[in-house]
Image (cartoon, rainbow, N blue to C red):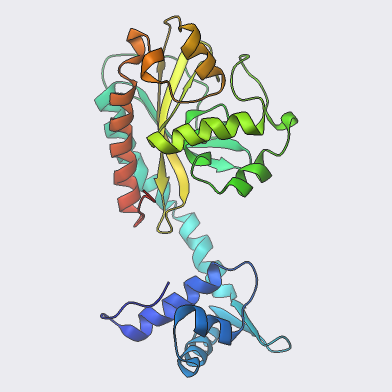
Length: 284
């Protein structure tokens, strides 16, 4: 990412160097940083020296490399302490739950599991069904709509690292992906549509629709989903689709499924609002 013109150019260039260091798994040479960012070497050295003086960079003199300093870690942990994702998402989830009269939740990946961090119930007199998606609960990501919505936008290698073998694919109701190739087909469908659905994979008689939240790097960092009772009997074609946790195609929908795309659009509006509030943007 090359520094843009305008504003405070020195600050902008310094932040670009800091972001570059944060995006690399190992320390980098000043020459590499200068080349990748399109900066003069002298400017790069000056910026790195200032970042090091403030604790945001560290110079490994023996290897002639530069890496992140402890101040970068402190800023990152301070960000987490303030729970910005949860604070931003909560009022949006509250509005979503009220609009669709369903329970809405925010989930993140915790290893190969979906961790629920925010839950909002509808404010109407309608009493939503009791759900397993309480705050703090973890469920297999390949079975939840919230998990599938995130997994679909992760690099293939990361998905493989999270779910490497058939023993990674636990089963709750006898439905859902049983292998990585099957999951990949499901994720491809989710990626095309932009939203995920699970029908009875977590709890029989319940379904969920979810869409991802993106950060400033267009990475899926969370997802928002709504869960509802879904009691109709699926057709054989839709049953086969549900067993692989894919989005339900139009020709396999039963009448009670017909609201799902409409519901997904409402959920996507909520995720777009959270993404924008976080300074993120969708990759598509």
